[in-house]
Image (cartoon, rainbow, N blue to C red; front, top):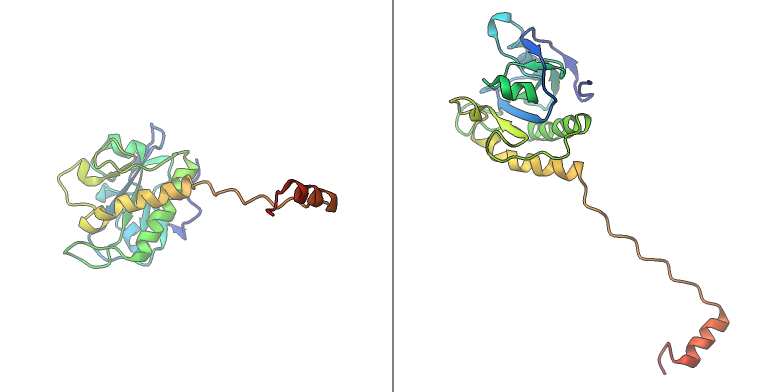
Length: 197
């Protein structure tokens, strides 16, 4: 099992377990703060923290690996979800209120989700609003506001963009090149009235 080539570096956490289920979900969380990817991943390096995520995305969109994908990160208060999910902790662009995320973070969420799906044979990313979808949230498994109102509102859009990349709409066929007719064929067509009177 590989990790994403989109990362800029590794800041590894000791807080993980062996993964016992195939990867079939992605779970986004918000950091409740404005942080770089390195600082965000650093929150998960103390053993005493007893928490982690597979990836961290900083406010500028940088992506850092925190727990390799073949391991279960301790992220969503649910061993069941974490065994199946790649979990992603993202920086906010401001604290409080709607807990917004930057456009750079949103773009990185989409790129990373496409990459995760492609490498793990997830055919589509479905946000159903409950744990049955392949795009899940922390609040589905615990009494928390995570991932915050702003990121929560973006999840259908993230799924839409990921699915458009995974399953592009077929392009219409180019019109066939006109057939070149010989002079004799044109003359016969004129006699038949193919070109009008």
